[in-house]
Amino acid sequence: MLTTTSPRSPGGVLLVACYELGHQPLSLASPLATLRAADFAPHASDTSVEPLDDATLKAARLIAISVPMHTALRLGAAVAERARRVNPDATIVFYGLYASLNADYLLRALADAVIGGEYEQALLALAEALDAGGDIDALRIPGVRTRRTAAAPILQRLPFAAPARDALPPLRSYAHLVRDDAVIPAGYVEATRGCLHTCLHCPITPVYGGRFFVVPRQVVLDDIRAQVVAGAGHITFGDPDFLNGPGHALAITRALHAEFPEVTFDATIKVEHILERRAAIAELGQLGCAFIVSAVESLSPRVLAHLAKGHTRADVEEALRIADAAGIPLRPTFVAFTPWTTAEDYLELLDFVAEQGLVEQIDPVQYTIRLLVPPGSALLDTPDAAEWLGPLDEAAFSYRWAHADPRMDSLQRELAALVERAAALHRPAAQTFADVRALAERRLERLAPVAARAGATTAVARRPAPHLTEAWFC
Ligand code: SF4
Image (tube, rainbow, N blue to C red):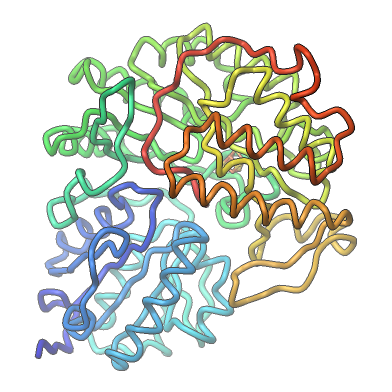
């Protein structure tokens, strides 16, 4: 049996990722490089594509679980419970956005420490402190919160090492780009961390508070190069918003295109930035941008105001025109169900998707996304929160809420099941959309269903858009 008590032993630090939207986890590759540079020999495991055995858990003195999103935290909590049983002496730390947000519960129930914000240097400092024989409950390390010591997340630009991807599962295990009939391995990088904006529903807002940090251009380009050499023909820029730093984004994509003209990329860009930075969008089209993901969230002025999104329905229409002119398909994402979304709003959203010819550009799961309110959400501080917010369900990592119109909550549940079934059966997006729309019209008692209204489905003609094989889940 493998045993160790030293974080410096091979596998003495174990980094675990559970789900990162089908990407090879940067949240493993980046701290792997930082720890190796300080003479640690960490092991990394991505449970979304490979088993994590008991021997690996037992060998670790420090088990660090990456939780950048809600799904990752749900899965990571189960890993922590198992790790505690298998290796009760190990120190368990959660790191990433959802670690900070759920710190109170995690420290009480599952974790010895949590790290939010910029995590690499805090993880390294924690490993070094344990190596020096420190007692976890007495440690005072910047960015590391324990049961006894409070510490704010580190929010400053720290040194970045070029991510180490050699110990991770190969790119063929992860999401691919589907373009026409080709299926192309996709890599993943981040050119920035955090976000300049403060949309109220976004988990980045309470952690970064409107700040973002640039990853050095050379670090990003080296990481891209390593992934292209490993087989990537497409790169996802996973920045919360790629045009927070437009000069940085363009410099990197120009260099990418100059070195690898055949490699395409995608990025997430908010509607406001598409409107403000049209010339940048046009240039991204020339540099090989295969698609842009944009968090449209809703078309309802009331919902958009509640989320402080900073755009309108007319802005979304204009963003579509700008993307069309650049030859870049726009792939909208939605928060389709919120406490403020009326039945009319929901049906209007589906009408918009049909009229704009967006059916092939939207992952059907987007029609089912329900507002998630994690602990610490900026929505908790809004003046009317008491009117719609229910109790915190700590073990579910979110607050409960119920819609004033019970049809909306039951429709959301039915649609989620419908879309999950359709995904399992690989149904075409158009068929799933038609089923979603028909069910919504029945349940919401639309008097003149679309099928009965001549001309109501006239769509803008669009070519099928490239997409990744992993649907977007948060
Ligand atoms: S622009 Fe996007 S990433 Fe930034 S705060 Fe708003 S929703 Fe979050």
